[in-house]
Image (cartoon, rainbow, N blue to C red):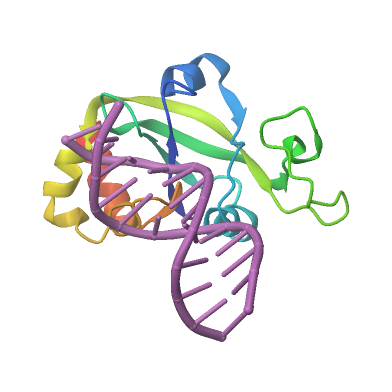
Length: 150
DNA sequence: GCCAACGTTGGC
DNA sequence: GCCAACGTTGGC
């Protein structure tokens, strides 16, 4: 069982959208490192923090859980889709999605500023690789953040 | 909207 | 396989 942090732009898809939908395919990941985490490591039951990026309130907004492990992202085969990838083959797909289930909204939103200021989170992968949209979270980091937002 | 960081592409 | 050019991300 592992823990992850998934980024989303709330204007595009927010924790409130997930609360409404209950479950959603985490689509549109087009970065190899993020893809590899999803395809090779993320398992059903893994814990997820939902992080809002590129917006007014940047930070951790809620909690989710993986409800389905990696399967090919259908968008990559649809020429009319924004995420269409002509180089991806049906029997050798390049891009994957996992399904995510809503667990809870953060009672207390944890802003990036507070994440950066926390000694316990100084090694958080989010801070080391600021452009990666799927990052692992250690158990100690998970517990610390959970306590902050609960 | 700006700009720095950084991932990807493509020519050599 | 290197590296410059280019495109995208993401915080401010």
